Length: 469
Image (tube, rainbow, N blue to C red; front, side, top):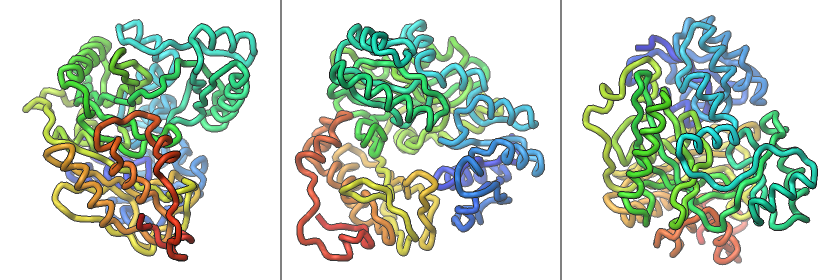
């Protein structure tokens, strides 16, 4: 097994990786930027190393700094977490050249699945259905219009690289198309260093459902069922659950087995997530594949009982799926995850500052992943997620009630948080009925989510994040 692993990330995922690696008896090296020097999990690492200034480009995205840590401290593995360099094939290659193992899929798989149109074409060629879409496009109006009309309006303009919903814009007619493409190209270039875009058929009320897969280096791949990630704001997930409500288990298993068979034949060799858009009539339509650990991996861990992080590390070292999953894979109960973010619950603008209070429930069935504690600072340099609140119940109704109770018992003070909005969504009749889709958040914002009148001055300033509705 690995002797010493560098954790090339921060926050909740760095804390999560530290716990798993220590339980596996592996020495750890945590890296941090100057802005993160006081985060509590750093004290849990065997070694901690400052890699630069607060901006990501000067620290967590600085490949030279990370390679230097590997070589200076004699690490034989590097776990990238998610985001930052987790899906950068050039970095994966450099880690290997530096004498360590990149804990993730091989460089070739990261490169193959990192470009969305090429990945889509590749998966279609192996038998996966996908939505109607275009090839890569220039900004020529005639080419754009011809491609959009071939698919049919409305269409979605999407970057060919990157992820997280960044740079995606809807166009309902030719007049909106050029503007949407211009905005998408500009944002994609700034965010991912590539302005390549393509067009895809737009579905009005699809569900975003993804499948977790694991592969070893011996030609074996299995699936760990699905996660329903339909509750999104600006194409970014805020609530995830498993099993997906209202879809037959036979249909889910059939698609999961299809994926496992395809990726096994192709020789996929570590963790991965296949993202789909689901409609009852067309079923699962391949969107893209993420060649990394997901933010929402804990949802699958709670329903299957499998520690995905430990499995990923062991698979990267060369162990077989058979040795890790001797009892097979099954689901039990229902899990819901809510992402608690530092942001105004009404304007959804980021909120920064020092956490004067931070407390979570400790009830049975509740799990919390965070990289912060009282006194930590939420800075403007990184994403706004403070913590992930994960609950598990025997049934979906039980999980919903436990989540609402847990959100009520969570305390965040010093910055604003989205807790009131999360509670509103989960307690809505639509969510309770399982009538989820990717546009539900916008529907609720327009219909039932209103800023209460007459709230106390402290709440209006956002200093007291727990607003009573």
